[in-house]
Every structure is written in C-alpha cells, then in structure tokens.
Length: 120
Image (cartoon, rainbow, N blue to C red; front, side):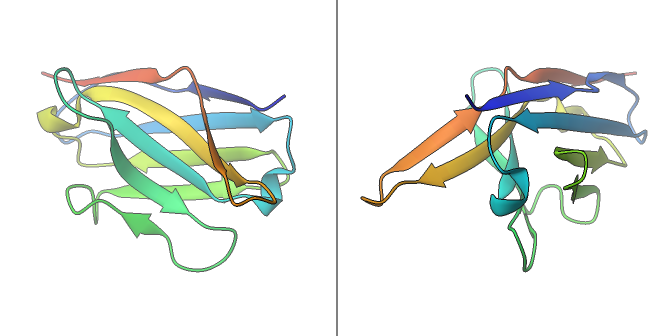
C-alpha cells in the first residue's frame, strides 16, 4: 500500500532554514508527481509546491523564491528546502501524491504530516 512518511519538521528561526523529507513506498515513485501541502491552525490546507514527473515545478506565491521542492528517485524521496522562514510558514506540512485510475478517478495519498513552527 502507498505510504508517505514525512520528517524534518521542528522549530525554525525567522530567516532560518529547515529541510523536510518525505519517504515514499508502495508505488513506482518515479512515475508520479509529488507535492507538499500545508495547513495552518484555522485555515484550509493549501498547496505549497508540486513537482511533476517532468516539467516545471509549481510554487505558491507566498513561498516563491524561498522554498525549493526536489526529488531523488533512487531514494524514493521528495524534499522541501525552506529558506528565509517566516512566522506565517508555521503549519503542519503534508506530503502528497495523486493516482488516477482507468476511469479517471483520482485518489490522493497523504503522509501523517510534520509540524513546522517558525518563532524566535
């Protein structure tokens, strides 16, 4: 079965950096786009960054120029490098992949989430 396990969250300083990792298993990792979402208290879950199998990565306007998504297909892992952290980056961060079956039904798979808190 599909498993996504995030790690690397914690307390970050404003202006500092954190790196999140998501280890994937149960599917052919290199065949799927991967994304990072986040959910702050009282807010809806939002897309932070997405990386297709090939092509251009996509970022939320709020993180452009500060966050970088990358993947290592040999390690079945996707990363989110977060630089120039801001207090508004505080949220639970989730790893995501989406599958589409023969009937074009979509299935979203999520990790358990990792807390990122940005505070001095």
